[in-house]
Every structure is written in structure tokens, then in C-alpha cells.
Image (tube, rainbow, N blue to C red; front, side):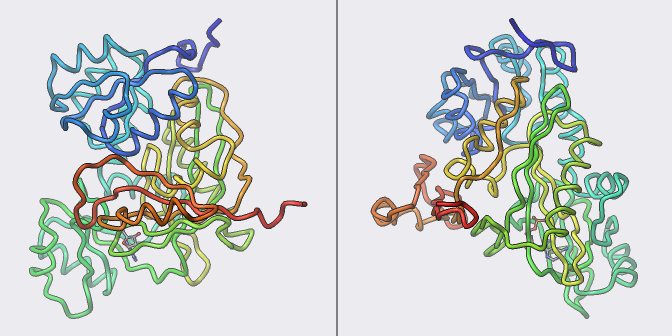
Length: 369
Ligand code: AMP
């Protein structure tokens, strides 16, 4: 018998069909975890033969705004979720009129725009770096006078992995920085002199129950995540502040599913939120091999209204992304004891493209033998 959930609908029991918008590696690993619990996944994405489609039970290959395809998709699934948050507003609302959509439109709306996101996080009482809306070289000059350089200018929408970002050094011409950013609206952020970058992933079910993975330490290379290390080696109060911030945003945003919260630990000890993502996150891939319940299984449980799993870690772990040609070293990773290799099935390797990851496990330091 299906358990009732807060939004009045029963849990989606194993055997059901989960619709996933977006066809990349996050959808692939979600579909694999869903299959382990007896679900089938139906992917909706514009590209043929993507990482998710290769392992999904069904696929709709269509543009995100194809109304006929969206209606047929909604009729074929029990719930819809996202591995890609930049799905058009109208499409999400169309789906939501026909089938439960988790997380809901408001969560996507906030996370699609860096300015809306920063304002939301600040209004929730969670610290962020100083920021200002930028609409052209003049407003950039004014904001630089207030915030100071160096600062980081980012496009508000569709920017990821450092795309659409400019480091504005002292003395740089605002017109040049604006032109290099290349978007209609920007956000200027005070440069954070950080000690390290961390993230926390929270799962939340339709009944409001939450579970979080412990904070992890992230190192970026060329703006792309390079490694995630756990344990993060943080002071207890820093870890607690990071978890409290992530839980607070998850609750206020009313997320059903997963929320990944990326943060800076500033040299003065403050924990400042950089960005949020309402889906599985690259900094949570280590959980596949180092936790009894991975972020992907937890995502499936949350979206389907099942009890959340135990997020505890059984091993220490270092996850390294395999970017571009790095995945070509797969024979060496396979030969390495304690290394868990994950490849995403992408046919073409390009510089900067995430092709896979390898997680190296170690004995959990605190475990008694
Ligand atoms: P983002 O696309 O916002 O995740 O930024 C990518 C990376 O750029 C971050 O992980 C940081 O390493 C760096 N970065 C972004 N914003 C700032 C900032 N305000 N201060 C310092 N470094 C930043």
C-alpha cells in the first residue's frame, strides 16, 4: 500500500517509471541506481545516444519545448525529475499539470539564475559574498567602486564550469570585462580569498524528512571540479555551519529531491555559499562507492517518496574527474587496487568534457578494526 506524502500523493513504489529531464551522466547514474531498486527510467533530452539514454528503459528525444512530446512523456511516467536544471519554465509547468514534478518549478527558477539564487540565499539568512546586479559597463564600474577588485563577473544564466566568468583585476577596463562576459545580465561577486571549497548534499522527501551527506572538500582545475576528498578535514564548527546552511536552504526552498550546496571557507573562517544545484552533483559521486546509499539512490528515494537511506560513509574516498583524454588511461585505473572506475559512455572526448571519474577508497580512519 502506498504511503501518503505531504503533497497528498502516495509514494511511487518500485516498478514505477521515473521521468528524467536531461540526458547526461547525472541521469545515467540516477537511472542505474533506480534500476537497482526496481524502477524504470524514461529520459527526455534533445540529444541522441547520450549517457542516460544508453542505460534508460525508454527515451524521448525532442526539444525541451516540444509540447506534443512533453504531453506524451508525462503520460508515460509516474513522476518527473531533472538532472539538468535549465529546462524552460513553460515546459516544467506543462508537465506539472499532468504528473508530479519533483523538485517543483520554484526550485528550478531560483537555481537557473545566479542573481535570483544569491538573493534567495541571503534572504534565507545564509551568508554569501558581496554581490551586485550588472547591466552594462557603467553599472559594472559603479559596483566595482563599492565591492572592490579583484572581483568575479558572471553571467546570471546558463553559466557553468567557469563559462561566462571573468576575473576582474584591479585597473581592468569595465567595458572590456563586460564584453568578455558575453551575456545580457551579469552578477559581480566580491572575490573570496578562500581557504578551501566545500559542498554538502541534502536529500529531502515529500514528507519533509531530510538526510545529508557529510561536507566534502573540492578542488577545481580550470574552473572544473578536479577532486573531491572526504573526510574534508574541517574544524567541527566549520562543518556544522556548512551543514546548517545547506539544511536551511533546502527547507526554505521546499526542495523535494536533492540539493547540492557549494560553499567557500574564507580565510577568516566564514562559510559563504557560492551556488546551489537541485539535483545530484559531481561532488557527490564518491558516495556510489563509499556509502551504503549513494546520492543517486537517495535522489530516487526522495523523488519517489520512499524512506531516505543512511548517508553514513563506510570508507574514506578521493574522487577524481576524468576530463577529456584522461579517460583513455582506463586500463591503469582498472589495474589499481581500491580504485573504482566509472565511465559515462560518451563517444567523443573533447577538452573540458567530463568523460568519467575514478574514486579511490581508503580505510575509514575512525573505524575500529
Ligand atoms: P562557479 O561557476 O560559480 O561554481 O565558479 C567556478 C569556480 O570559480 C569556483 O568553484 C571557484 O573556484 C571560482 N570562483 C567562483 N566565484 C568566486 C568568487 N566570488 N571568489 C573566488 N573564487 C570564485
